[in-house]
Structures are given as C-alpha cells and as structure tokens.
Image (cartoon, rainbow, N blue to C red; front, side):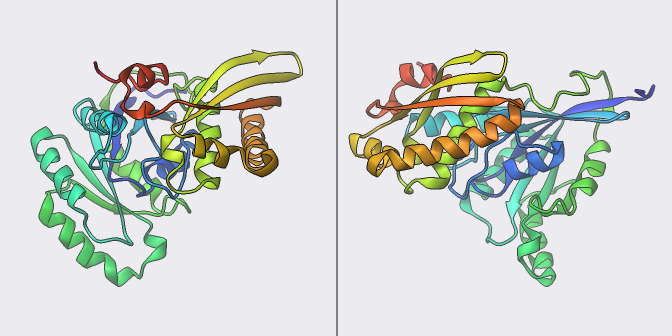
Length: 299
C-alpha cells in the first residue's frame, strides 16, 4: 500500500555514447526496455523507464549519448539529450571507469553548470578496473563540477545500483504516483519491437551499416495465438542492403530469428516476423524522412 509521505520525481540519465546508460536503465527496472550495443549512439530517442515501490516512484529518462554530430539525426539526438537536462529533478551523469575524461564530458560539465540541477556522478563499469584507479578518477571528475553525490556501480552486474536508488530518493519531494505500479515504460509494444530489431542489426552488422538504418513496423496484427509483424528495414545504400540480406538471405534470417525470440518474450506470445529491406538514400539528413521514422526533426 502506498504510504502517506509518498515521493516521486524525474531523473535524467546523460553521458557520452557507450558508457552503459541503457544497461543501467534495464537493470533498475528489472527488464529490457532499452536496446544495448557496443556501438556508440545506440539510443536515438528519449526512453522512459518507471521504477515503483510502496514508498516512491522514480521516472528515469535514458537519453542519446552526447557527441559531436555529423548529420541532422545526430543534431536531433544531441538536442534531445540536452533538453532533457532542463526537465528533471535530478541528473545522473554516467561515465565509463575504463576511460579517461573525454572532451564531450567537459562540455557536459559546462552545461550542468548552466542548468543548475542536482547532479549525481555515476561511475559505471567498476567491475572492469582496479579499485585503486577510482580515487584519481573521482578527483578528476570533481575538478570539472561539484557533484552532489558520486556513486561507483556496475550496471551489468547490478552492483551499486540499489545504493544509487537510495541516493536519488534523497532529492525527491512528496508527490503523486504518475504511472500505474505495473508499468515499467511508456513505450508502446510496437516501438519496443522496432528497437529490438534494430538492436540485432547493431549486433550483427559491420560498423558503418547500423547507424544508417531505420526500422518501420508497417503492420502489427494481434491474432488469438500469434502476432503478425511486418517490418521495413531502411538503409542508405544499395551495398548496405546487400550486407543486411546476406548471401542467400542468411543474414536477414539470423536477424529475424534473434529478434523474434526477444519479441516473443516481451509479448509472451508466438510471433510471425516478416522483414523487408529498402533503400532511402541519406535519410539521416532528410527532415521529412526523419519525422516519418519518429525522430521529430525540426524544419
């Protein structure tokens, strides 16, 4: 039962690409709602995750990695991440314990000073480094910004994440429960399914191909014993189309098989998945196509 002094609030997760923001989000809510890849710029839009107990509800927003953009899609992703910093109660800056401070992180520290919101430094991947390396790293980051808290964690193993939740609670005020207790995300199943398919492409394809891919689910048909999903995979070059399909269609079959397994777990139901690959040249610089793929680019 919800307590009288119930707390709620919004937390924005920011950082440069590939520091483990999506892994942290999935770890906190206990299931996969954000896709994971070792390739940078995996997350393209804001992803809402909801953590609810009898005492509090924390709404986390995972944002695209802040980087120096090379196209309009990149500009959109950075804009989304920076705007989210203003619309929150607490900011988590996630950094990678295995890497030195990056120039983009120095830029983020400057932005934090301008925003003026409470910020917790989350040092992720501490399971991959020796403990004695953490103190110099903490000193380096503390010289950039006066963080309210510094919490070392491993998003992959879950070590330190409960301590992080406890630290966040200290910055929440009494408030309403914004979402039902059984909700873990505001994303529709169709959007999560599309992201699962994109994740498999990120896992399996050559480095330059996945960033030029967009997923469109043209139809999602719920039947009694099966869900039929019809998907368009858009890429920017004919040569990329050939790589995605693979020799004799083997790569596309592999992508479909892996994606279908995860989607069936999400829906708890059999899935028929039909994939088509189409070319849309330079769509990442086309405002109309970006909007049609759900990226809300400005004219």
